[in-house]
Image (cartoon, rainbow, N blue to C red):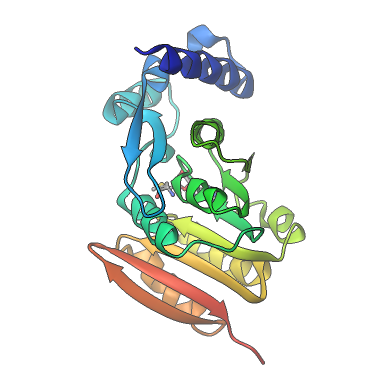
Length: 234
Ligand SMILES: C[S@@+](CC[C@H](N)C(=O)[O-])C[C@H]1O[C@@H](n2cnc3c(N)ncnc32)[C@H](O)[C@@H]1O
């Protein structure tokens, strides 16, 4: 392990133990066995920080009765959204919110463009990894643990956001219903929502229902569909 990775690992260990409220010795070993992946993007490469062996992490978390660590992979939707954003980034100073950020790659790209970013996820581990991803990419951004299906009011109160990002989060009926209620409250009349999805039924239901409130433009990028939603007026 390089010196830099050893420093990152120690910092992760400290923060994960504190936020989980457990001694470092109780953290799953696969959570701290991390790697950095270089992602080629328009405007410059970005770096993702992630557990090296997701299956092993899932196994260890499952053995401890903890949920599947969906946050801990670089999902194709997150990559597609980051790639699309790198091609058409938000304006410097734009207020950007990411929901279900996982490892935080789209937020890194938005932050690199000079946007003021809040990256959120319901999983505390995701928030810790995203904070480290920002540092690794020399991006200034805020991160917060937020389950938006339960605590959307707090996000709406900090709005309106110029841009809301979400990649592959519409995989439960609860999330679809919450998104339909919450997203219109997050953006102002000139705001925009950018979603990436791998063709899940939940996302299809969401987009069909969201057309009542938003103009929706959808574009395929390989197996991922990118949706841009803008509020209808009047
Ligand atoms: C399939 S992963 C996608 C992660 C990342 N966006 C990507 O595409 O690589 C789904 C992510 O959404 C988060 N998530 C799902 N439902 C959520 C909710 N209601 N509130 C906050 N985060 C949520 C999970 O913790 C996980 O990080």
